[in-house]
Image (cartoon, rainbow, N blue to C red):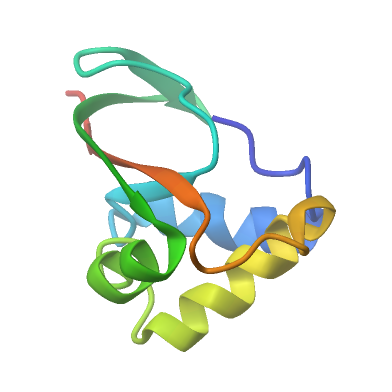
Length: 104
């Protein structure tokens, strides 16, 4: 998982949330893996445990706490900052929501 592609400052926030354990899901516009796949963030390994597909607006509303944010609006703000190259996308855009956990 990379955190600097869209917006390096927003990427640092997301990376910190993942490593602290506050972020246990991520919303993406493309399919990047399958259940059981692993990825590494700063030498820490994580495993994808579930993948759901839904509209972006639904994902922000339902999973904002698992994304590490206190409200859908807060998540939407950082999501749009991180995905500056996709700012034209609407809340009805289909996305993948990946749930993951740290591997010990």
